View (tube, helix red, strand yellow):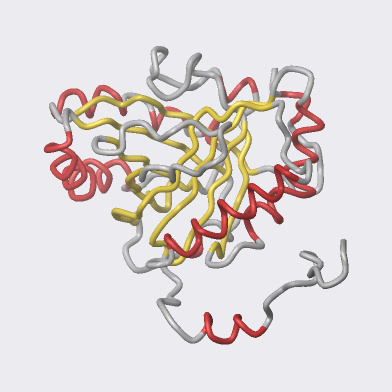
Amino acid sequence: MTTGEQDPQQDTRVEDYAELAAVGPYGVHPGHALITMVEPHPGHEYAYNRWYEDDHYYAGAMAMPWMYAGRRWVATRELQELRYPEKSAVAQPVTAGCYISTYWVTQGRYDEHMKWTVGINKRLNRDGRVYQDRTHVFTSFQDHAATVYRDGAAGPRDFHALDHPYEGLVVQVVDADGPERRAELLEWLRSRALPKRLHGGPAAMVTIFRPTPLPGDRMTYVKQVEGVDTRLTLLWFLQQDPRACWGRFQGLDVEVAEAGLGRVELVAPFVPTVPGTDRYVDQLR
């Protein structure tokens, strides 16, 4: 560094933080989510897991402004084999993507968060802190569309969902029959299909999101989002292991097809990882 240059490690612009904190939305509701399903390349499972938990989960996510909650989930081979439909527009093969991370972003703070995330990920990549031996199977930022609760006003809210000790997650991806039908699909799910499925079941809530396009200056290893105008992503938060209640999640594809509103492209169960450990890594293949 030559005389007069500012060390980028020391140039924190600390005086800007007070001004930024004083303006804009700062509620607790999850207005947006990052949902990222990833497949480590064969032979890289342990190294990928340690990189993500020891560095990227924090430096590439939780340390960022307005990303206020996160949780990581894993699908063992046994869980991968429960997925359907076999021909999926999301995962090819349908078993691809053994890890998924879910993050909440404060409502109304998507633009601010995206500015930061693009900048920090470029920096991490430049500094050799991005693990390359992995494939993004299903990664996108998404806007919150609705939350449906099993127990009404009782129990945790959606902003608690990533901190509450849920024992399982089911990811359901549905494509409407055209952009003009997505609102109809959403209303049918919210008012009819989901309340019926939730009643007396193991899921305490379902959050529904709509994917948004990734910015043009995103990292090149993340592909552009598909189905932006037609897709809905449902996250079912379970109070028991999905293997113990998988019968409750059979036929979701038939249900949507019979309603004539679209096609289910993925139904995939996960269990939470145990941070700081390599539990389940030896059960992925």
